[in-house]
Image (cartoon, rainbow, N blue to C red; front, side, top):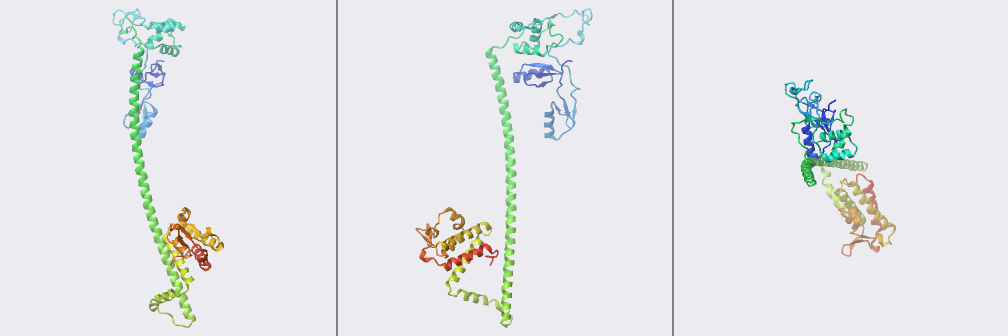
Length: 414
């Protein structure tokens, strides 16, 4: 069966015509071509009539355009193709007596000229002269390797040992002389330079595509981050509103409880119910009486409680951090109460990173320790509690307030 395509023996590419094979050879320097019965695909898009020569090309067309329907017209345009001499035109078909159909004398056929040097090398390798001549003719006198490859591929042809014939008046002249090493080197350099430029252009195009993709992804990430931040801000606002509402309800509940307790005490004492309008002015008086009480420990305790309440309010968005500060302060107080004679429990370096992370950087942390008797010394580098200034009552009160702050969920609400 005659071939319907040419196949490159170096890279396996299928080519539809001799012209395509020549162009492929110029670009790639491949010279090993053979006839093939495998047809070049011709898949035509039914939507835009674009022809595709491979399944990969049709898949790429589908990805770019969304067109999925293709008609296989491979066999419709298949034409026999041959690397051998072209057949005579129909008008010159020979008659049985050797004369042409037109009445002219039959054209004389002769053996084509081939590269004698390569021919001798092939004969030296053991190939018959007819086979070697045929191989050189159909491989274009390119090289010894091309001729050997042709022999291997066509060794089963019935006419492989027949001398090729060409018209005597054809323009097929003597084989072109082989290129000199310098010319081969220049040709190879030109092909390499062409391939390099093509590769550079492709790399630049791919780099532009990648840059566009990076920019697109970057914009999407920025937009997603912005939306996430907006949602987080909205969530925090709603959470704070809910916390404030919860605090308000807790205050109202405590206030009602206080009012009920006051009313119950007045009832037990046989006093008349207090007028709500008259009760309001009495609040400052009660507070004034409390503030005028000369009991020092009670005053210290209130200051400690207020200091802890301020600390919790200042960092209410981070409950874990507040709880860790309370537990650290409780540890300090416990060490002083258990080991009052150990100076290492009564002296704290203010620049210590652990102390700063847990207590020092929080508003009210150092103030609480100063209320417990600690003093700044050595230019403010240390907090120190002198042995003679340890007040067990104050240390115990500090421990009680810290325990309440840790365990009472309503601590600091009012």
